[in-house]
Amino acid sequence: MKKSIFILLALFAATFASAQITLEHTFEGQLWATTRYHSDVYGDNSDAPYFYSFDNQQLKLYDKNTYELYKTCSYTIPSVQYPLVNIWYVTKNIFTTDGKTAFIFCFDQEDGDTQDYCKIIDEDGNVVFDFNNSKLDSYFFTLVKINGQYKLLARERGAGAKTYIYSLPGNGEEQAVSTPSSPKRSARKIAHERQVLVETDTNTFDLRGQEVK
Image 1 (spheres, rainbow, N blue to C red):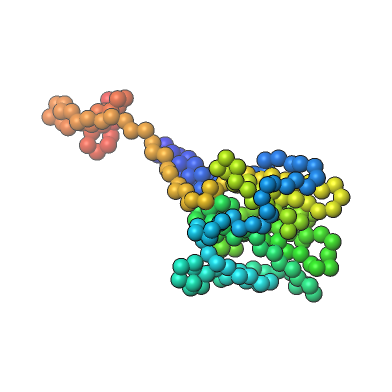
Image 2 (cartoon, rainbow, N blue to C red; image 1 turned 45 degrees about the vertical axis):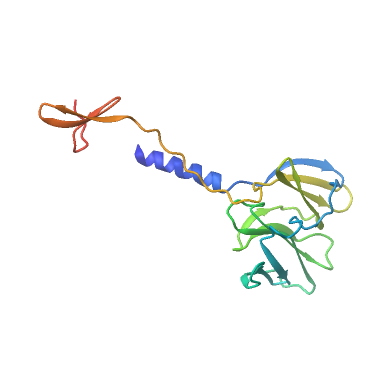
């Protein structure tokens, strides 16, 4: 019984920790918000997690206070003649809630007609979310905050384009995982026939843990 309770609590905690990016609405056509797309989500840079640079193989994160290199994130792209990588919204606790930096990563071939893929990746290279849509335009992502919640607008290109609005799990702050405690039962010691027993609301046990009938 105790083992089952621990398993349920572990599953609950894991579900809480891996909050999801979810598709909230789809519009026909390209929809825009009253903000510049790709504008810095950290307005005055006071809360920005890092300075960063990237090329076709690496993203480098630099500490904003010491300017020291914090981490180099390497990634593999297909071997093509004209690779094109775009990285947008290098943020922390917006695409995830675990304190790790995450960003939108898009790969394209300059001579191709469609996006090869767009994904959200964290600083350890884990895929947080795969848009799984080759029609998305990597230059047309917009991150907005509405009533305290971050949302991402992702737009397609070409005829019949659609705009997808995703709700994001993070609010910019790391969220601790809280594990619910199991309900406690009141227990008291009693003396009975020269024995010390432990009595709960429903059962009585000796000091070895065996139930006394």
